[in-house]
Image (cartoon, rainbow, N blue to C red; front, side, top):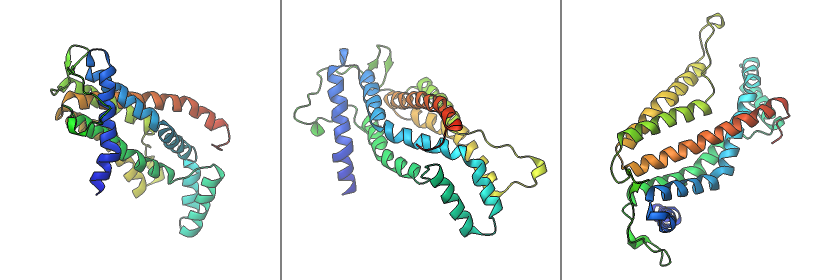
Length: 248
């Protein structure tokens, strides 16, 4: 039942949208259609993504205050939680909003990924009656990159873009000062997760991209470049959050 709902509400509309866009693209270039559809979906999700990133930036700004609360009330978990919630409320932060927003976005992005991995060549049986399949679909993106075949070099570019995107979004890993004594478990865990995200994830994405037709890598690259541009804009505006009250 869940798969049927997923197929009807997400996969089928996105696949039809891709075919519809392809029919209007000069030369029926599937690569241009993939970029256009990816950008449309990213712009639709932009309010959610922006709120998620803004929440992360605000959390970063109150990080020192949170650390102080944890140290001050380390023997009283109830008071620690109370003070942390009061801090979040003061600065207009919902610590659970980020998880909810991610959960909303994941099915949509998975459906889009599925369209590019499973939907090309297009399945005519899932097309709406008003969507017409172009007679000749051009899989050569800009006339030189065959999106129906695997591309190692494009996969490597995707991995590099993923590294840059993660580096922008993640705060620098905190350096341990020997004078502070042995690092806590949470500090070690945070450093380990940051390292894995920064270095392992790009390799994972590159390897996955190598195993699929280049159309998947093109989608991933477009998505990463959009995220990088968004991160740069938010980072520029984040300076205002440092000097202004966190009321957003």
